[in-house]
Structures are given as C-alpha cells and as structure tokens.
Length: 91
Image 1 (cartoon, helix red, strand yellow):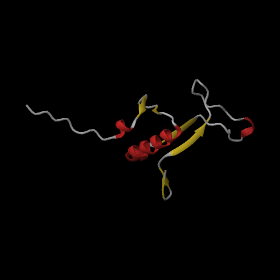
Image 2 (spheres, rainbow, N blue to C red):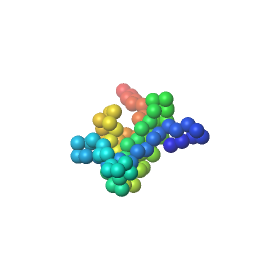
Image 3 (cartoon, rainbow, N blue to C red):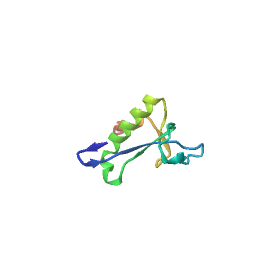
Image 4 (cartoon, rainbow, N blue to C red):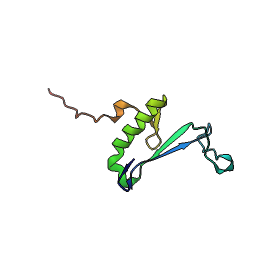
C-alpha cells in the first residue's frame, strides 16, 4: 500500500513448503503457483497497521484463506479488527 513515494505495506506472493519455508523457484523465474501471501508492514508505518490488517483480511477472505498474524500467533478475524469498546459496569 502506498501514499505518494511512501510504501507502508509490502505484499509478497510466495510458494512455501508444509513447514512454512519459502520454496525457491527453479531458474530464478517466479513460481506460477502461490500458496502464501506475506504482508510486511515496516515499524515506521505501525500507525497504519489497522488499515493494513483490514486490507490483508479482505484479500484472504476473497481467496477463502485465513489471515494469520505471525507476531501475535493468532488468526485475524473481522471481529478482532473492530475497536474494542470500553468496558463499563454500573452497580
């Protein structure tokens, strides 16, 4: 995702093994088969992380895939993207 010259999310289409390791294509040309999409958000663009997650979730949903956050080790869902309301309790 980009604003002017500033890129704040990189999207990589990859082929990975069952162990999650990237499979290097033969001959250096891109693989015609993709089974993983990696989204990279630089730390400097962390304020845009919610926008990036929402875009990544739309892509994953359109493909019928899950979106997995490797840093949090969790599956991202639409519910997890919604801002949490403050908890209030009245006695």
